[in-house]
Structures are given as C-alpha cells and as structure tokens.
Length: 157
Image 1 (tube, one colour):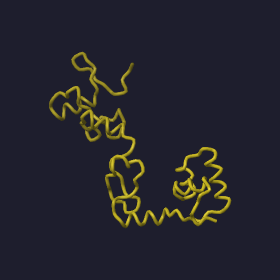
Image 2: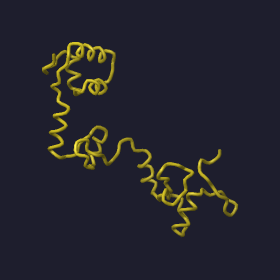
Image 3: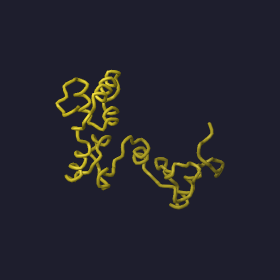
Image 4: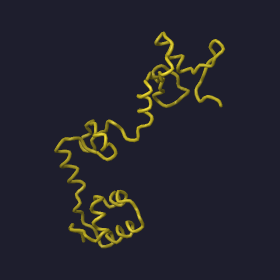
C-alpha cells in the first residue's frame, strides 16, 4: 500500500520526508514514539514552519477531539475553558454579565403563534430532536418539550 507522505530513500530504507526534516533540525534521530504533525494538515507540505513535534497523547488529542478544550464566549469573545462534561454545549464564559446577556437573548418567554405551536407539536410528533426545533423557533428545549406535552406555562399566543 503506498504511503500518503513524501518519502526519501536513505541507506536503502524509505523514510518519511517530514521526519527527515525534523531530524535535521533537532540534529538527532527521532524516536519511534515521536510524532511529526503537519499544522495545516497537508501531508505534502514539509516546510519546517508547518511541522511540529508531538507526543502520541498530544497528537491523538489534537486529531480525535470532538469538542474543543478552549472556546470563545459568544457574548464577549473572551477565551475560556469549559468543564470537560460541558464542552459540547457551553457557550459563555463565567462572567455574570455574559450570563445575563445570553439569558436575555434566549428568553423562553417568546411569543409564538398558534401555527408555531402546531408546527412544534407536529415536528416533535415526528420524532425531531428538541434542539433542532428550539433553534428554529429561537426558544429553549424545555419550552419545546412543554409545548409538545401541552403543559406550557409560558405566555404563548
């Protein structure tokens, strides 16, 4: 099976070019457990500024991470690190002003028409996810659930 990386023949063996570049900069042979990562993900771009030496853990974390460890607040733009169990959904930093702003913007007390209520119930009845419906109507998932169960205490018309 052909390699996806450029290689050069050295002493009768094919060695990946990106590893040769990193070895020449470090002036030593790379260990088998050392990874050379292509920053721009182009496997043919072996310029030194595009290469980075990583441990197996760092390399795996970089490529296999579903949700980022560091995020940017949607309100103030500040960089923050969400709790590991909340990385998929946390949108704001810990600033109370940001929390107030996001609550104001995503207020569950939106006015909905009778057609909106019927559409929400129909879509929920077809098994559509709460999150998708909530995003389309700019309401919370809890509001969608309460509307679909016909227990909505909210001021909807």
